[in-house]
Image (cartoon, rainbow, N blue to C red; front, side, top):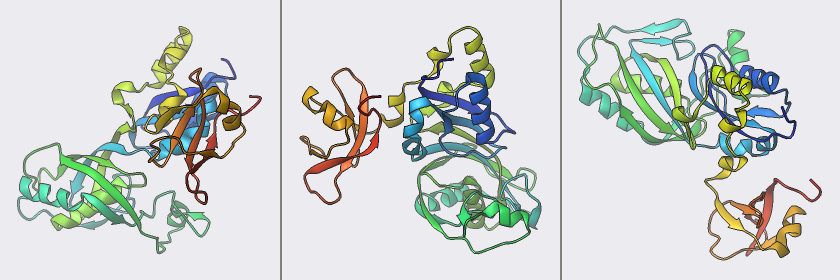
Length: 307
């Protein structure tokens, strides 16, 4: 496989593998070192995990910021140490009466918009230089900083009531970076008056990539065997397709590749811009200059002079 290969591989992450495991397997399959993922998925979670290869790794930070969509099954009645089905039960309350569909929908609506979450102890968030799950494995529970996240849309996928014999329901959530669906499940349970946990989770969208765009490891191995891998690799530009595009005149190409500060082009009102040359090559990501009004500066160089 060519060492200069670049692009984005929309992977369907299987259950039982960490995001890092997926990166290591793809490195081995492609015999390429420059491979990275774009946002951690827990081992028991399946779904869309875009993988950056080669030059695309320079843009992975922008992909981590994508809004994401999940389908989650929530179980009412038991809270667990991990806030999902893998943990030990720490609180139980039997469902005393039927919880109507209207009650569930009302509880979901309470979660829509900007909300504050406290990350679960079994998470990769760092506090004082240490991952929270490391404290949790030591049997410690420590204060965690809250964070504001945005639930863009949340809806019920399984209409009907829930009761003692049917304590689960399924939701679809579109949310901002950093949202813990496990914690959302717990908070929805609180709205309903019960302990709860996330029973299952699948990520169905990450930015522009969805389940229909994603490939399993079997698909990837088959594509490699049949010399079709480039057919399933998306362009580097997909990573930043949500930024405004500008094609610069040839006279500015060297300046951009040297990282020069430039006057703002016409109608530049967004936070970030992708600058291309006349040949269609992505050169850099530019942002408004924080000190010089009316100018833009490079935030990320993609193609520099000489490469």
